[in-house]
Each structure stands twice: as structure tokens, then as C-alpha cells.
Image (tube, rainbow, N blue to C red; front, side, top):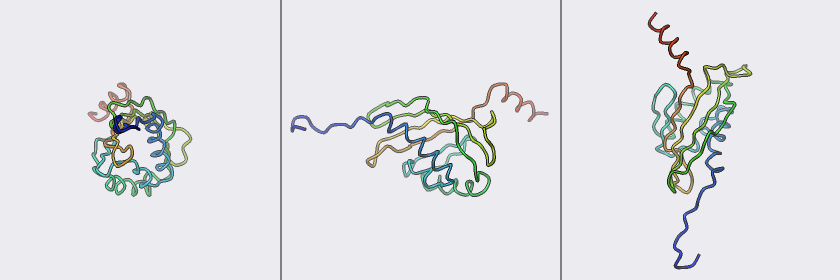
Length: 153
């Protein structure tokens, strides 16, 4: 770099961003909340599929580990697919990710246990970090209407 060029902005490879969901899945499948949350910013938020907001990496770990040790013990995230990764600005990106979840002993996830995630990623602290992760359960309109009918019966 010459003195007239100034500092160069590093352009991330999309592979670097695409690796984030894979690392989270590895942590989940080991039942390791710290590994699951390692890519969160210290003040990052996890919004679970029920809409609960968990603020901060330490909170995500504290909420997730007891689940891994009990009701989610032996669960696995499978059929992971990054739908797209988009660099919105030099230090901001989004990732759209889909996956299924099996419980202990299951081979395949039932249709009700497929999810999508939208990651808002920021480049800070010398790396890409999750600012916000929004989870949503994939439910067909027909299934939602059947659940609504059940609830009012």
C-alpha cells in the first residue's frame, strides 16, 4: 500500500459469512451453548421462534445450556442450507438459513420442526459477529389454521 492509497477495506468472502450457521450447528449438536453462541456479539440478540428476545451472548449461553442438558438433550440440527448471504454495506451483512431439528432418537425431523433464520451480521472486534438472529418456525398456512381451530375448539 502506498501512502496515497489509504487503508484498504477488507472485503469478506461470502464463505466466511456462510460458515457462521455451520459453527452454530456444530455447537448445538454437541450440546455446547458456549460454542453455539460463540459468533454472537457481546450485546447480540437471539430471538427464538416463539418471539422471546435473549439479549447478550452470556444470556444466550445461560438460557441455552439448561435446555441442552434437559429437553433438548440429544437433539440435532440437520438439513442445513444457507439460502443466501448478502453484503449490505462494508461492515453489515445478512444471512438467510434453513434447517430441521430432530430430537434424540429421531432420524428425520417432522414437518413441524423446520425453521428459518435471518442473521444480521456486523464486522467489529476484528471479526464478523451476530448482531441479531431471528428464528422462525416454517408452518404452512393450512397448519396454522388447523392450530387456530384447535385453540378455539
